[in-house]
Length: 528
Image (spheres, rainbow, N blue to C red):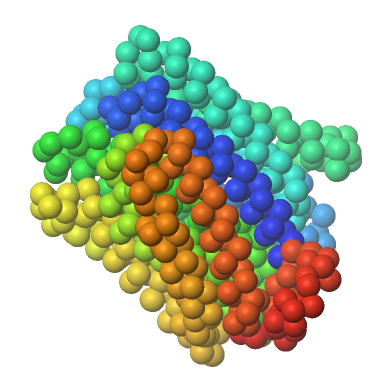
């Protein structure tokens, strides 16, 4: 897969991911209307437990399945279907066992969380672990097979079903109790996973008709052994990376005396907002992972360096304007999405974490691709220790409170990002530009910020204050976001921050259709 196909794959995944996040941005505000802050807090605690187990049974396995499929294809062994079958057989067993254990441990886990209502949420979520594990086998196969379109469609199907069934079930079951309402909000997780499995099975049989006839029941114990041996470090990595939210919610629940449920809910709202631009970065990681594996196997360091630098630049291009926009509209975002006048302060500070989340995500994917798994585990454990220590110190302070969990995230991820960068430079035996890649994005973002602040707080502030409703705030904010996007693009273009190479990764037609005055500003030579 060449760089252009990587770019187009990233665009396809990014578009589908943005659609998913738009659905999510609709889902969470509606869910908050149904469940209120108390119910959302119960939902978040239970769901964070689920995500941790999901990481162990699914997230930790998907890159391994992808890796094995890529390797078998590269070796032309004809055993890619056996990878699918063995991983599915094992994960069905593992997912089933973990689902049962989740139910059995529901009461102790609710006691740890100081919330008896969480027990029902855990019981309702348990089946989702099994189906998510099965879904992982298909997604790992299609990712290794470089079929981005099928992955994107399955993601959309899963999320649409998730949103529809979760909201319907939450609105029905909330009439029984808060705990049942919160549990109802998780039913869509299982339904969505089942729907995605059905689609990917159909896509597999359509693309490979010989699978059903010849390979459906083909197994290979050698591949199973390879899967299990390879998976252990990946599972540890996934577990460590997904401990963060559990640590935050349990710390807030146990250390905050007043309105802990409101603050846990607010923390969840903040994460749902920050994760919107992060989906593009995640798509970048999914798109580049098979290429990183291939480059490492072929010992093509030049290719690894170019792609790493390209990733760094894209991270800055996406995250810096996103951070500026979130900070400018923090209060307006909470008013528009959740109908409340507080919560913006957590966004203003927490937006900074976006750049470090992005760097650590991409760096970890690259480091996994070059088989430095012990390193990721050790650095991940270090970040958990730092985060836990800072949580214990900061969340206790009344004036800081829940914001302490955000600060601890920023500090721990910043340290991880720096250590990862040093590791990549040593592994590739070359200096990789870090700060240089973000200069143009920073300048363009400053220009965008100045214009938006002048419009928002000078020209429109009186109108907004006199008409501070969700509808008015939403119309003004979304309009200014569109204006900001245009300003940022033009500013980036005029200071030489956009290359023809990057436009071509999306579509060569973009460059052709640009006016001459803008076309002349596009950098025709790609720089690292």
